[in-house]
Amino acid sequence: MVKSTLITGAGGTVGTALSAALRAAGVDVTAWDRTRALPGDAEAAADLLDEVRPQVLYHLAIASRSVGIPNEGEVVNVTWPGQLAGLCHERGITLVFTSTVMVFSDDALGPFTPSSTTDAQDGYGFDKRRAELAVRKADPDARIVRLGWQIGEGPGSNNMMDHLIRQHDQHGRIDASRAWLPATSFLPDTAAALIAVPEHPGGVYHVDGNRGWTYDEIVAALAEKHGLTWQIRPNEDFVFDQRMTDPRLQTASLDTRLKLPPLDE
Image (tube, rainbow, N blue to C red; front, side, top):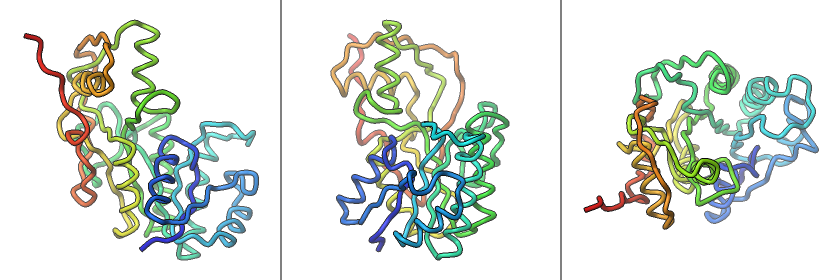
C-alpha cells in the first residue's frame, strides 16, 4: 500500500482533490516546491526526490502559471515529464503522469481505448502526446493516465461548472451540443482512480465516467443538481464521441452523481 507521495501541481484543480483524498486515506502528501526545483532543472529535481523519497510521484503540473522560464510551455509540458520519468526510473519511484483525452483530435473516432492511436497535431493535446512518448521512453513502468474534462462543485477552478457558470453569466444562456459525448468525470472520482493506479502495472490508463451522456444532458443535470435556472439551448454544432474506456479502473459513472430533470409536461 502506498504511504508517501509527492505531487506536482498539488494546488491545481485535480491536485487539490487528489491531495485531499490521499490525506483522507492516511497517505503522506508533499507538494512539489517550485522554489526548490523549477521545471526543467533535473539536478534540483533529483535533490528534491532524494530528500522526500516518495513511493509515488504524481506529475499533474502543466504550464498554467508562469515562473519565467525561457520557452516555458515546451519545458513544462514536454521536457519536464521526460526528465522526471528518468529520475523516477533510476530511483524505483512509481510515476503517475496525467495526460489528456485531447491527445486525440476532433477528427478521431471514439470512444477511445488505451491502445487507440493518438493523433493531435497542435496545441495542448500535441504537447501531451509528445510528453507521453518522452515518459514511456524514460520509464517504461510509468503509469500514464488520460483524463477528460473535470466536474467540480462550482466556480474557482478550471472545471466544467466554472465554465458553465461563466458562460451563463456572460451570455444569459448555455449552448450545448446534443451530438457531443464528452470525456468527463467528477473530481472525487478522478482522485479515487488516480489513487488506484499505482496498484496496476505500468502502461496507459483512461479515467472517464461518461457511459453515454451527451453534453446538453450533462448541463441540464448539473443545473438540476445545483438548483440553477439556466437557459440551455441544445444544438448539434459539435459532433464527437470523445469518451474513453478502460475496464481496469472502473471510474465511477456519471449516473451515480447526476439525474436528468423531469421532462416538461
